[in-house]
Length: 402
Image 1 (tube, one colour):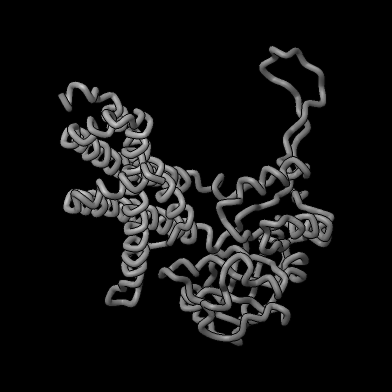
Image 2: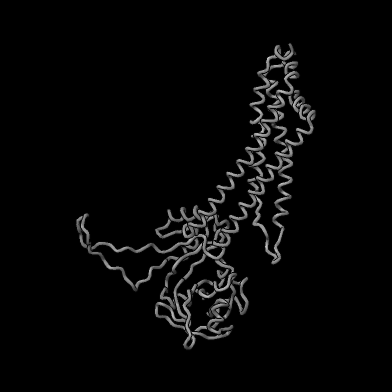
């Protein structure tokens, strides 16, 4: 196309200006991609830190509320109500069917039934309050990576023993093979053996949790036919709200996403993402303003040439197309150079480690960001060239040539 050839020759005739525009645009693209990688990396890091050791979606029994058993006026201050039982424990029944339903969801990585309860570990005059989690042996690592954190013993619940934290083991002077009395808040007691000891990532976090096979936990917590909750782990933790809404509509149970239990983190991630998006938008806007101003300056410098083209009968549309093509070419070159530079820079930043061997920056590549910045840069540059194009096409050849 002749207009494209003219646009390319115009750009080559001012190579320094064209080079500066391309480099400036590429730097904007690089900044955009680095910010996107940092924003996603930080979101992933925060999400993993909070949701890595908790269920992404939790299914629990419905809340039991006291119901009036005597009719009373609506404006009555006091109404008689049936008292809630303090001995009957709310539980989920029909567990196999619910597990099958949960595992059938495409986002679900795994689902497990859990018995949760408070208990004391008693050894002589010493005792420690703990939360017991009853699980199937095969599901031990589904919610939290216990096996990877094991420092002594075996991660095998099938023998009926306990897996406890290292801090708790030190407090009670326990080691693998030690026998200790487990006394639950439901009055159940059992002499049990310590089969494994794990260590939490942070000091003291492993003091309060202990793991037990679900069959033994059911007997100790008086849940022979049910469980306290069904816990789901997803492939993508961010899909939890959608999965929770879907299951909530299908079940008469409480279904909660992890974000609902951690609203502060969700708000922090949203705020951080919004701030990054604003900075990225202004970065691209700066690039596009630079393209528009440079091409607008070019129209004044080439008024004579544009007048000659118009005097030879070339239409206003042709002149406008030449400048739009210039903007498009600048966008293509800038995005190509910027994407290449952004890819190498983000990978390099993501490989830098501290003295302890940890990664210095939370970098995570975002393929969608690359597609967005390429489309936005090319389209934006073409649109930014519209104003110079209209200005060039409105030049009167008689005024210039004459």
